[in-house]
Amino acid sequence: MAENVITTRSLGAAVEGVKDQYADGKAAKVWEVFIGDKNSRTQNYKNFLVGMLREKGCKRVLDVACGTGIDSIMLVEEGFEVVSVDASDKMLKYALKSRWNKRKDAAFDKWIIEEANWLTLYDDIEDLVGEGFDAVICLGNSFAHLLDNYGDQREQKQALRNFEKCVKPGGFLLIDHRNYDDIINSGSTASKSIYYNPTHTTDIRTSVLYVSGKPALVSLDYLIDLSSDKEQKDLIGCEDTISEFRLSYYPHRLKIFTAMLEQAFGENSKFRIFGDFKTLDEIDIPNFYIHVIEKSSTHF
Ligand SMILES: C[S@@+](CC[C@H](N)C(=O)[O-])C[C@H]1O[C@@H](n2cnc3c(N)ncnc32)[C@H](O)[C@@H]1O
Image 1: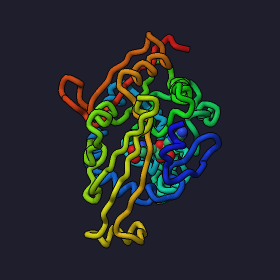
Image 2: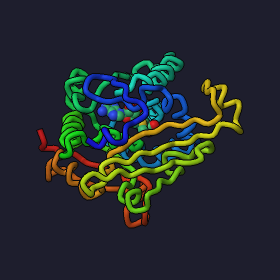
Image 3: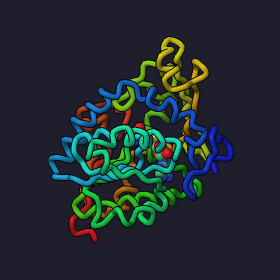
């Protein structure tokens, strides 16, 4: 629907049934530059995510949007058994390369990486799900890549049902999205946040498309300037000093997204929301909302 009006630059198709916005390889190539200081990002995760997973005794984790592998690698290094999936082979290429480079380390040798699509996730990886994962993570504003092609959010609900089926009873889903309520209200997007601490991202141009009076699509044009860093430019094999890519997102409103999660996981599950890894009373306008859902242990 909305896609016919503003398209993503890349209309490639990855696994069946999903458009791969990363198929032209542009974003994949500069993704790690966009992420910025990996240590500071990883530190935020360690404090929050690893702390929570350890406290709950989680061992097996499914990363359903591993991209180039940043979160998964941190979890493997922290001793978790990780299965990582993504729909984009251009993004997976970098995760697979990291695993290959570290293959002599037993933890990395056991790291499973597969191509899969959230719309068919359970069927795609049923043999790996077993009794369910202790935790499923979908982080880095990934879920918002799934657009609302029918105007009733049916595919997003289907994807959440698939995530729910991969979580064992008593296990967790951690899923985040940018603060689209704020993006819609302000018409702008912060280029630095808890996930991204880039030195080279000069701008994230924000367009909000309304369909029938409702915000239906947010397009972010990322502008990355490598002119002051020849070493980085050569390292990633970028021909131009300015790298631009556009990604389009469905602007999840906090209230509506929370209601969709409650529908997918059932009312006996426990729902908590954090803002930039803090409790909501500690932060006024976060850049990211992180939902933590503990699936009811009687949910079969
Ligand atoms: C913004 S990247 C984030 C990657 C990583 N979590 C990070 O923070 O760096 C979003 C990822 O979601 C993946 N993705 C988008 N739609 C998908 C779908 N329907 N099924 C599986 N993966 C999908 C994309 O291919 C992309 O690698």
